[in-house]
Image (cartoon, rainbow, N blue to C red):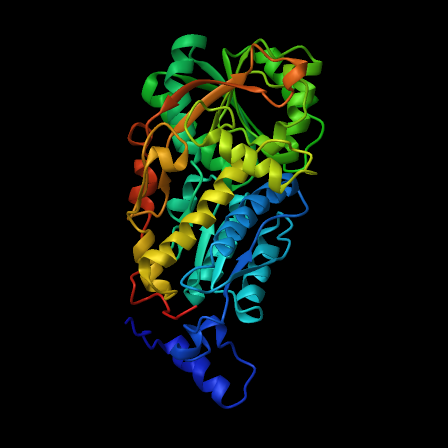
Length: 431
């Protein structure tokens, strides 16, 4: 039986609670007998956006989490304990993410946090989570820094990152479309770090960055950037633009008839960003971690489950964001079962290095959680618009053109930058 390590922070919290001070005692404020009691639920804080640039993705992320939670509760819960959740909007704003994490831990007594799309928000949440020792699953943000310089012992990163996607696409694009590239980059951490990875690969394979244009978050008029593309005439434009910005960007490129030339490479394309757009808006090649039409066992049943659970949802099929939210939450609950305890250190160790079969994850290659960075190493897919698109099947918008095994797209720079806190530096408690 694991005994909680008494830390200076834990001792101060216990002392304050015992003297009636309004200090944090947190999700571990109960003694071990009560914390492990079967009538005390396991409580998960859902830290996804419901407003801002990534509101659509946040909603999809949340649906994935809830399906995983409902499934385990239907089987009787985890270790005989019901799983409960609470959601608070993180607003696509890092400062809000930090406040939400603090409230969920100190007031709502959440022992686990799950969710994020914006990498700045994810980083803010993870700093608070590490302070209290609360395990945090970053489900859908993709900056290489999340499993690099901003890694934490309590944080696990479930999406592919910008380097993974760039490695899958850049070398082939240079050979197919030319060495002269322009970069359009969302002006925040994910955009910058994805562009940095792309530049490094271009230098490695003999490409040239003609120009990089920074795109402020919230941009809806891309005419000046697209005019510059027309003037420069690059062979390839690499765009790291996300959320609602991505939707507006794609519509304007299509309106100007620029979808066919130059070649467009999108590091990553999230399903909620493009769902419902005309097929001519899906120009170029882009990365993803999953597609609902993959010809693999289990995929059709997974889609059916989604449709039965969410019959009124506008997105009639699950996408990569839903998939990541579901898989992350499912694996967290599985890790608690494997650990035989909701002790945070035990669950961290159950997650670290955990291997997941391709069949279990409905991907082409086995996946694993890197013990040194806490990033899930997984299959990376490249896709483009479905050349056989039909109005009779409006959901089938993608055509998967390649899949790459995780060991071929490893982010070695992130691994070098990541310095996880020790177990001793991480406050221990029983959720």
